[in-house]
Image (cartoon, rainbow, N blue to C red; front, side, top):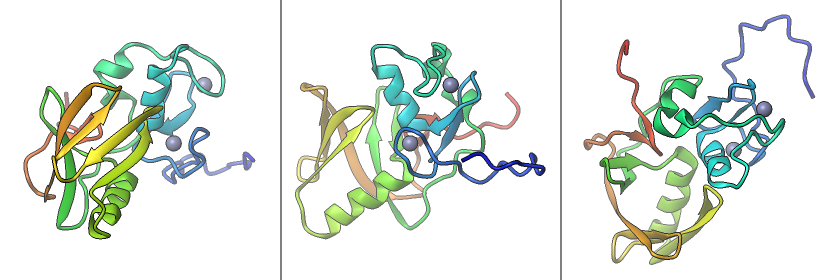
Length: 164
Ligand SMILES: [Zn+2]
Ligand SMILES: [Zn+2]
């Protein structure tokens, strides 16, 4: 599928992610130069091999501690007035854009829960209790709030701080 690219500078367009087969969302580039959605790549780290889905090059551990250094572009804040957030040990994070849309659709259609597969695991969001449950026992608070409200970044990717 690779087109001969004479215009190698124009690599801004989101490539299709080989894991979810959708345009890469919050794209990250692995050391082997393969690109995936950040959440898809995070799923690889939860797997047994912790390696690239395409070439099996091991993913370095700092992908978990410093994922921002793997991002191919700036982490964009959610658009729209309201967004969905979850709270990790470090603080509040906005969900990734596609998840935002799906969660909001479920919420607007009057559902009390939303289920999805994230990082290769089942997540259940409970709109009544304002929690998400995953890995059987783990729960985190969730909320629907103003997109502008204070949070760290998107899906575990911090907003880039200028020159660090
Ligand atoms: Zn993906
Ligand atoms: Zn690779």
